Length: 216
Image 1 (cartoon, rainbow, N blue to C red):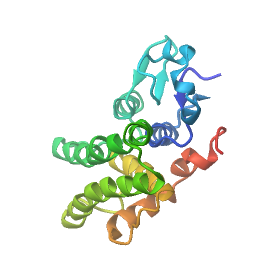
Image 2 (tube, rainbow, N blue to C red):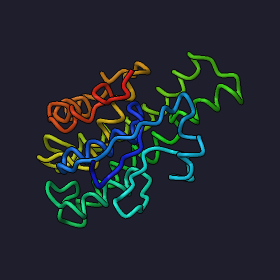
Image 3 (cartoon, helix red, strand yellow):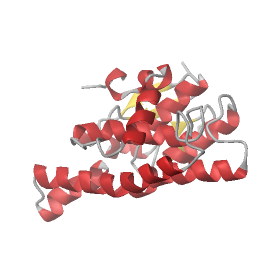
Image 4 (cartoon, rainbow, N blue to C red):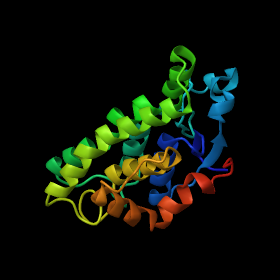
């Protein structure tokens, strides 16, 4: 048994982010799955753990609850500094957080499962409507993301320099989600190249959705 418990779902991109960070840091954890499509995250037992009823949720050995993937990842980066997920300089940290939040705050929130489900139940959206919605908001975010990467001398093998960090974690998780909706990455050569570099790393591979115990 580990001192860290991760409540998550294999397909959740936010859960994938935290799994990558845990693997990069070499931190062991107990994996507790909650099937979002079956509503397991809304059952009383889980709501007693995380009143928000969302994944991921990280529970520490003293019972402390942490939610929100970016907050969890930055906590992990502070308690286990190597390898670093944020640059040492203030401007570099701001740039990496900017890129991470372009995905985590602008793309993901409008494309997560509860929003897509609401489009169906409240507005009668069909499968193609959902796909079009998802692709639209990814492209709205990826277009400027690609331009920033392409125009910045700070972009290297990864989003910021030669080591993967917070921005790359968010990017790889988003690209993985995109595949389910057939998002065309041809217009985004920088994103495609950086994602390939990420997916060549063991931490990203081990944390990938298809490699989890609840994968379907």
